[in-house]
Amino acid sequence: MARKAKTKVKAQAKANVGSREPWTKEHLRELKAHSKSKTPVVDIAKTMGRTPGALRQKALTLGLKLGHNR
Image 1: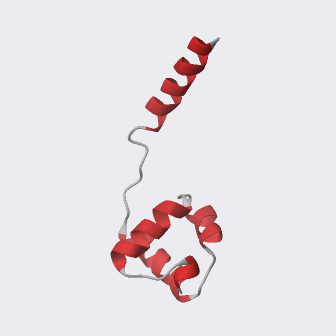
Image 2: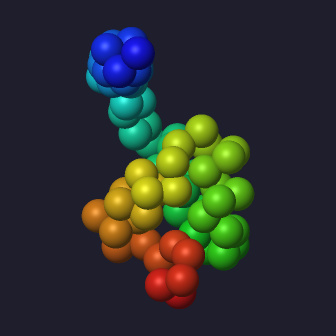
């Protein structure tokens, strides 16, 4: 049974490889607009289809404030 669990985890990991969507200019504009309007990170993540961590990391590199850093 442990063997099946390991196989399932490996299959999930392979499925996620390369699944990152590149940031387009439109995505960046949308993120900046959400930052200005002080939208909660969880809500931004749902609308943009990205994880809260990905949004926070991109905001950090752009010098934007999101979440509790405002």
